[in-house]
Length: 107
Image (spheres, rainbow, N blue to C red):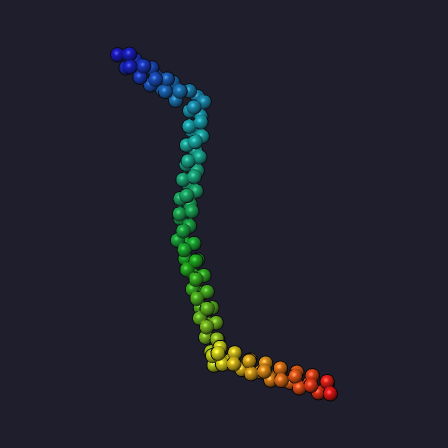
C-alpha cells in the first residue's frame, strides 16, 4: 500500500512539473526546433531529384570529355625495353666520344 501511495505521489509530481509554465515553454521551444529541422529536411529531400539530375549531367559531360581525350591519344610504337636499349647505346657512344676527346687532349 505504501508503494502505491509513493508511486501516486511521483506521478503527481511529474504532472505538476509538466504543467509548470517554464517546462511547458521549454517543451514548446523544443517542439518548434524539431518542426524547423523537419521542414529543412523536407526541403532538402525535395531538392534531391534536381541535385541527382545535375550530378548525372556533370558525369555525362566528364565522360564525353574523357572519351574525346582518349580518341586524341596516339599509341607509342615500340616498347620500353627498346627505348632503354637505344638510350644505353647512345650513352655508350657519348662515353666513347668523351674518352676520345680526353685521349686527344692528353697528347
